[in-house]
Length: 135
Image (cartoon, rainbow, N blue to C red; front, side, top):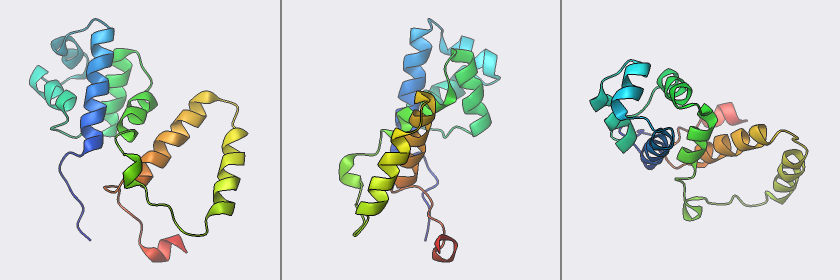
């Protein structure tokens, strides 16, 4: 299996969210770039989704913009369309169990983070573990 190494739709969606947060904070690309230690051109590439963002850089961007990193991840995870999700057969019991567990999580931030992780895992571009790891 070969993995796509270039930017994905999720990278583009996260870049758009970064741009929206930056604009909402009233900051320029140069200002944010200076805070996180990159050039204005590099921040532009992050915002347009042409360059992938390392986790440590994503955290720095979120801190500079005064937002939580999981909010940026959530934006990226919404890039997966419902048509891309293929339900597995005979998973009704698992779905019911997940819904019940999800409903018992009191912190909305934790629920949001869980949804973001699930969306990333369901992305067709997400690396899948070998079958022996899943058993």
